[in-house]
Image 1 (cartoon, rainbow, N blue to C red):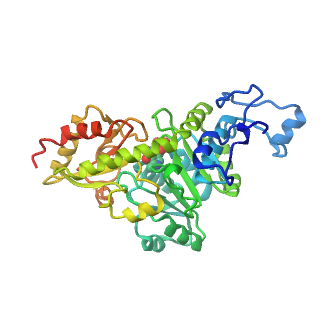
Image 2: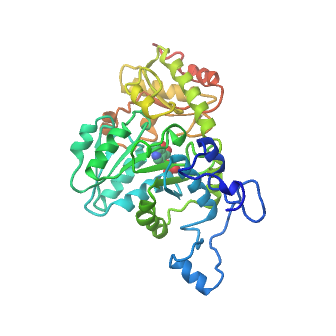
Image 3: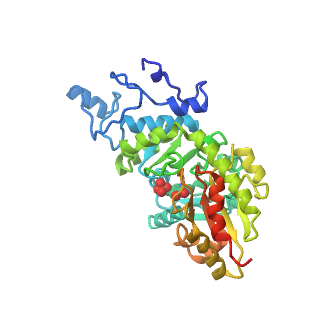
Length: 408
Ligand SMILES: Cc1ncc(COP(=O)(O)O)c(C=O)c1O
């Protein structure tokens, strides 16, 4: 590392978050480029047979094959690690492959996982798939540390939570669960997708591993699918890297470049997303058709104080429940709001500058058995909005069209 950009900060130095977001991980090549280059190459050449042998033996530094190492992917990994305060990171092809890689890295047949209720629906499907390989999962309420403690068995190998949760925006007490995990010697894994390190840093709160769907706010503009796992140098080298190398859940160099550039604007975007979401949440709270608004930065959120203690702002995602005499009426009311939208995009994805709206019960969480869905609190009248970077007054006006005439 010879030039100023190459001295960009990594973890543990004195540069601020925003400086790390813009500079970390960039090693300028001999061409003196100002913007990070993209290395679209599947393999790397060696100086000699002996050099190749030394690299394969792990005795010499250097990239070998992009399934398990690529300079552009490394740029994204180092930049994200610098933001999360992690010793190391491995990027993955998607958020789901990040969670899968953690499971494969920490468990074997006969092991057990404790997971919070109300996590992303596909995460539940993934854990169900792992039951085939003899790994059982117990679901507990996110906000009940005693239930977590009671669910732990001698063969429990990881505690997994998402905070705030999707779509309920429930908040888990990361410090309390980290303390429990430490006493029991079990790693605590946090899906930090909704907050990103701009708003919440679980490792600083005591968690051991962070996972991301980089598809969401790390990119922030709905362009690529990606994921990441962050943790200690020892965990990454000994447990995670073999999974990346042998299973190949690899992020492409192109997507890594897009994501690394996305990180440069992360804190600016997350601050504005949060401001806009709070404005929309407050507006929804005043609407007579709305039964309840779920957003951690509202004073009415049951874990508002906890959210303020561990997050820097509320994030982009809110959910709200519509009034209705029964499930059928609530579902019809929710679908009317969705169908009346002209600005909000009807898509289950979130983490975009464009606001999106979805009906979780019939989309993201439709594969959950109805009883489990109801128990988790995902009702037929619930809508989730991921508030983007448009003028929030326009987002409210779009929702007002569908809310009007609900017969309240
Ligand atoms: C909280 C959360 N975790 C994980 C994922 C999975 O990420 P991906 O779609 O990148 O695989 C999602 C996707 O929506 C999510 O919302």
